Amino acid sequence: MITTSIYGLTLDQLTAWLEERGHRKFRAQQVWDWLYRKRVISFDDMTDVNADCITLLKQHFAMSTMTEHVKQESKDGTIKFLFKLYDGNLIETVLMRHKFGLSVCVTTQVGCNIGCSFCASGLIAKSRDLSSGEIVEQLMRVQLALDASGLGERVSHIVVMGIGEPFDNFQHMGDFIRVVKDHKGLAIGARHITVSTSGLAGKIREFADSDLGVNLAISLHAPNNELRTRIMKINKAIPIEKLMDALDYYLETTNRRMTIEYILLKDVNDGVEQALELAELMRERSKLVNVNLIPYNPVDEHSQYQRSEQESIRAFYDVLKKQGISVSVRLEHGADIDAACGQLRSKQMRAANE
Image 1 (cartoon, helix red, strand yellow):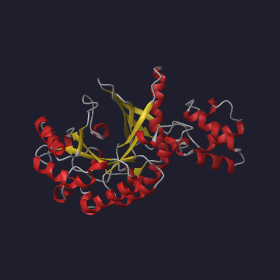
Image 2 (tube, one colour):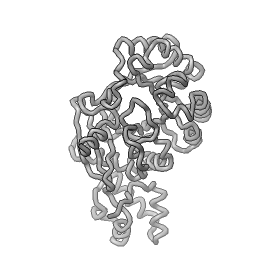
Image 3 (cartoon, one colour):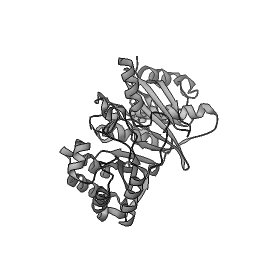
């Protein structure tokens, strides 16, 4: 069984690979066009690519390395896909409908080692990274499903916020972004792509220096070390001071706006005191930072955490606003299905073991 996805190659990588094997440069562009513009599902459908090239591609690459295992559709149009990989592992991918377009949330790892105490993604430890091809294929699977509907819909935005820590799979995450950004292919604009990290300081600096040029979001969730360490074990290794230094480097290097993600947990991090601390932490960076408040989706295995009351969310928002901090409350999607990231996967795995 061939498990290397053709979607894992950037156009430059595909061109070099074919040229090394005696094919002219234009062949790569032909193949690329069939993959991302015409979006065929078989190498044999690439009708203007010669037989020798098709045979070579079929010998080394697959166009499908995963199958749809479960599909949940919400009343608001959100669709959550649970894909089974070639090795039997399960990953989640989510299509969300917004006023500004269609957004897909992709997964970068099988499991997660960050271990945030409120998150369903971390219930199962990381077993491996996804290849760049497996990340791209998630997006292609969603787009192909949209194509099949005949409505002419197109994925316009991407968030790299699914299962796993994207910056712990930096090279494959980067190649994924280069593939989907390519103007000769899917042509999804850099400003329509956001990568979220729990705060790997060294990788944030590397990201700032890279050619990726996409948006950055930081999963902060607490304004001080004591609280953040309690709910996010990564803070032991990378405390807030070290994280803020990396964020300052990113802001100075890129001069791009950044999102601070803050999940509100009832009676844990949602008080006025925490809001004031967060405002103070963001004050010097406020011109290039937006705080995104996220209502918590309860997870059965993390019963110690509950969703904040609406009054608390409003009070937290008001404090930040009055302190001059740009702030928003995330619009919820898929509330009537397994909404929390990793929740569907963990539920399916738990059922399989019962």
